[in-house]
Every structure is written in C-alpha cells, then in structure tokens.
Amino acid sequence: MPQPIPLKDHLAETSLVNRRLLVCAALALLLIAVLLGRLYVLQVVQHERQSAVSENNRVHVLPIAPERGLIYDRNGVVLADNKPSFNLTLTRERAGNSAQVLDTLTQVLGLSADDREQFDKDLRRGRKPFEPVTLMVGLSEEQIAHVAVNQFRLPGLEVEPQFIREYPLGEHFAHSVGYVGRINEREAKTLDSTEYRGTESIGKTGIERFYEDQLHGHVGFEEVETNAQGRVMRVLSHRDPTPGQDIVLSLDAHLQAAAEKALGGRRGALVALDPNNGDILAMVSTPSFDPNLFVKGISFKQYAALRDSIDRPLFNRVLRGLYAPGSTVKPEVAIAGLDSGVITPSSRVFDPGYYELPNYAHKYRNWNRSGDGWVDLYSAIMRSNDTYFYDLAHKLGIDRLHDYMAEFGLGQKVSLDLFEEAAGLMPSAQWKRATRRQAWFPGETLILGIGQGYMQVTPLQLAQATSLLASKGAWHRPHLATRIGDRQPTDPDPMPDIVLHDKRAWDQVSQGMQMVMHDPRGIARAAAAGAQYRIAGKSGTAQVVAIRQGERYNRDKTLERHRDNALFVGFAPADAPRIVVAVMIENGEAGGRVAGPVVREVMDAWLLDEHGHLKPEYAGASGDAKPAHS
Image (cartoon, rainbow, N blue to C red):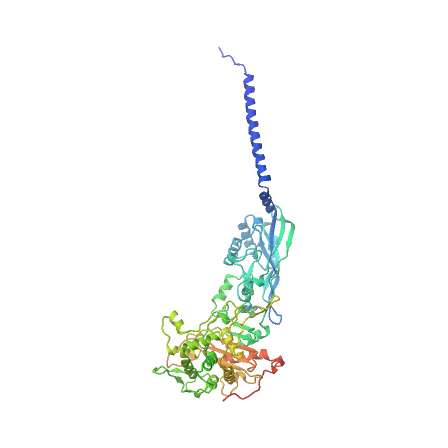
C-alpha cells in the first residue's frame, strides 16, 4: 500500500522564513553601517585630504614659458631673436595609447625612425600631469595641414604657437653668441624643475650658456579647470611669466664682417679688443656653422657632418685652440728682460745666424740664416731676431721667464664671461717635474724665449697679452657682455696691474714694435704702407711639426696641414691705443706677410670712416709719421 503523504508543518516553515529574514536584515544593517562608517571616514575624518584629491582631479596648474631675452651688438643689431613658431605638443593623459599615436604621427608626416626614437626620449623626461610635451618645432604649413586632417587619429596632439630662438646673422656670431638646443636628459636632472616647466630649450654654448639664468626669465602659471577628458573648461587664475633680460655685447657687427672678409675663408682665429676696458670688438673663428640648425633639433646626419669635418667648424679656435705663439711673445720677453735688469735697450748681441749655449755644440738657428750682425733691443724686435731672444731667455732663466709671462695672462684663463676658454700652458721647471718627471734643460728655455716648445696659448690670451702692452700693464679682463638688463657686469676677481720698476720699458718695447711696421727694414712694413696712423705690431711664425737639426723648412715637401702657423699681433694708434688685434691663420706660414695684412684691414675698419679718413675721435691719437729708432 502506498505511504501516506505527511501534512505540511506551517509553524516550522514560518519560523525558518523569519530566521532567514532576520539574518538578511542583520546583514543589510551591517553593510549599511559599514557604508555609513566609510562615508564618515571620507567626509569627516579624511575631509581635507579627499577634498584636495578631488580638486587635483579637476584643477591643474599649467606652466607658461617665459620669453627669452634678446642679444644685441654694441650698436643695437639683433644677434639672437625670438620668432613665432607653430610647434606640435602631446598631452599623454589625453592621448590614450601614446605609442600608437606616435606611430600614426610618424606615418602621417613621413618621419624617420630617428625622429620616432626622439619622441620616446622626449616623453620619458620628467613632467607634471596634463603638462604638454613639445615633440616638434617650426612646423611647416603642409605639416600643420596633415595633422589637422588626421586629428581624429591623433588624440592628445595639438599645434600650438610658441616662440623659438632665431639667429639672424647665422654663422657670423656662432662661436661668440652660441646657440640654444633642446634640453637633454642629463640637463633635465640638474635644472630647477619649477623654473623650467614648459621650457624646451637651454643655452648650450657661448653667451647663450654663460648667461642662461639671466636670459631665461621666470616661468608663469595658469590654474585651469578641466573635464574628465582633460580639456580646459575655464581659467581659474593666471600669473604672467617674467621675460628674460636682454643682453648688449661689446661686439660690433660691422667690424666682425670686416674681420671675416680679411681672413678670406682661411682656417684661423681673430680677436679684436679695446685695451682701455677689455671690450671684445670682434671674435672670429673660421670656418663657422649655422647655429639655427641646433634650435629645432639638428639631425644626426647634419651633426655628424659638422662633427667629422676635417676643418672642425664646431671648434672655437679663439677660446679652445692651443697654439705655439711663436715670435708674437717676444715683446713680453723683452719687458721681462728690461724690468729684471738683465738687458737695457742698448744691450747688443752678435748674430751670426745661430746661437750656441756654452759647452754645447747644438746650433739654435735664427730664421735669417745669414745672421743680422750686431743687434740691440730695437732691431731685435724689428727684425724678430731669434738669436737675441735666445740669449735673453738664457739670461732670464726659466723661473723668471715663467713668472713674467704669467703676469701677462699666458697659461691661464683670462676672460670674464667666456666659459669655453682653455687655460693653455706656460711651462716651468716645476711643471715638467710634476708632469713629465724630467729635469728642465737649458735648451728648452731658449726655444721658449721665441714662443716655441711646450708653450701653448689661445688667440684670446695672445690678444690679452698684447692689450697689456698697449695699456702699459692695466689689466682689463676680456669680456663680451657690457649690459645685462639695466645693469653693467663687474669683474668679481680683478687681476692686479703689471707694475714695472721702470715704466719707460713700455715705450721702449712699443718703439721696437712700431719699427716692425714703419722702419724701412721692418719685417711687416708692407702691411703698414699708407697707414694714416702708427701701428705697433709683431709677427710670428710657429712650427706645427718639428724640423731636424740642419734641415730647412721646405713648403713644397710639407703637407698643407703640417705647414707653419702664421700669427700677428698689434695695436693702434701706437701712442694712444684704441684697438688691439691678434690673428692666427692655421698653416698660413708667414706671419708678417700673411697675417699682418689681416690685422691692418681690421684696424682700418675700426679707425677709418666710410671715406677712408681717420675718424675725428682718433685724429689726436694718430701720431706723426716720425722716423723710427735706428
């Protein structure tokens, strides 16, 4: 028989349902309590913190880059300007997949793999949220059009108007003014992250680098409210940036052009100074380069061509070139001899065409192998007689010779605001022991007396030494900046003037240098022919490669880049100097014949008017065409 079906226990079922409802109610109340507790923590306990987080999600501070200060020459000619440019920026937070966006951009604009790699480097640099990164500067109209047409494929990319640096005179001031370039990773780590927010470029060389702090200015800010997609809804506050200070240089664009023309495209360097205040009037290193190439970001191919060129256009010969000065330092050696009492102007040496040290058979040759006979100080400078200065250097000794040359700034940095300057080398016995672990030999003192041997100077140092001759020992550090904003720069560490026991030595050496230019037997008389003012000058021809004892220099058997360097220094008007010029022409061979006319052309450009007449302000300092000492 079938089993009977039991009747439902309604009381038990009701009890079970009630228990379940109570559990659910308890759970619901517990969850509500947790939620209320969390709301209490967020709204009350963490109110200030969460308010700040909420505000930061909505409000952003965007930098406004300052306008870089301009650079002028002494007459107001603009050497470094700012021009408007359309630049391409990327805001990563708005781009989504930034790598994909950059790949698309590279395809749209037909860019190279190097450009694509540079984009990644730019994005890796530290930045604030929603701060755009500049990827390209100076977009062409065609590139702007391509970006606009493909904007739907390029989220986060925008074309923005900005200012970029421009050098109107291009290569003519590349080595003095310098250039700006894009901030690299190493520089970004050392810069003030606040001041350089929104700034893409920094001074790399020259005045642009030395006065970076003054030229850059101070960044401004804009506080904006954005939506969830990062678009700016409204501007909450604004602070204008402070533009950089303008800088006026002592350089003269007209004289710079005349100096470049005088050099005629030859490899070399030229410096023109005002001996009365240290102003650098012209500063030329040839060959040069176009600094505008570096502003937008130079290509690897272009940079490699400049870097690997045998003529080294990037190399600043004025400040970094180290050369044997040759006979251009003989006037300073003469000052040392006169001041120390080793010689007098009438002291004579017989020159048979060579010099021999006592108990040594080696002959130290004079450039004039037939000899000049008896020579005194004046004729020794006029004829650049090596034998006389061999003898003088031997009598002075290396220690005194080193100390006197150091007073003229040789072997040390002399400038005020040219950070690239090399120190050069003025050797001494102590230096040789420390660096070569060898004793100093008497013959090394002799060749030092004619500017050869270990001695190395920059063209700027050579110009400064000559300026000290012109100013009779008054030290004025060579400098480029004459005004920064509304102030004049000062020398924080002035050099002591050269004080001689007998001040007549200055005039005596100057007289010998004037004979170089104006005496019928002066070795550079051709360069001074027809001058309306008196010039004090000194030539120099310095060996690039050594010549064996007994051999003669043969240009036809010498490689062009192994030929002697041609140097010349001078100042004018001789009795009241207003300009000092130092010239070095690589492998030019003859200082008086090759470099001398260059000095004359530059002096004429400074001292004469457009009609070829002596300017009125220099007329009283021209001096009469008086006969030289004989």
